[in-house]
Length: 183
Image 1 (tube, rainbow, N blue to C red):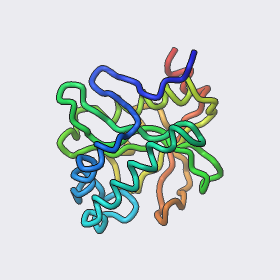
Image 2: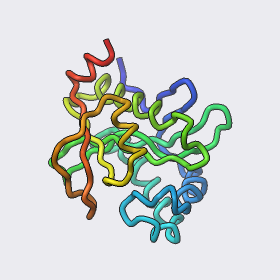
Image 3: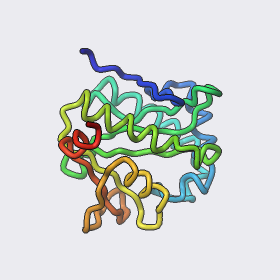
């Protein structure tokens, strides 16, 4: 079976970013509460359009180049509104591990979209990609993100990780553990 580049969940469409996503994505990235746990933090809110242009181009290119997968744009089915990004990203700077990452608009926080999209992303990673392990990174104070990783079956590592100029906690799940979870 050919690997799809877009997937759907009950309430979300996860698809590669398109040029038309730049402005709505910038609007999300301009919100200090949304980006406070991302590299650069709230100082990047002023540069949201520039960062959105660069990120949309980079994330969409990953689907056509190596590694052939990357983060998706999250589109809410009900409204067709862009709600952030979600998916998997290869991290050469961390020995080629693949990271589950997500950023959602604060308008949909608490709706369960992060968990729904994370489960779909892990299913994609273990169902369509030859991944044996997927990690998730969060700043120690980002408890909502850590709860999402726990809900999808990821386990916290005892050690901290230096990534993107930040010290993060690491969660991970293996193909074997995912298989036991989905039986």
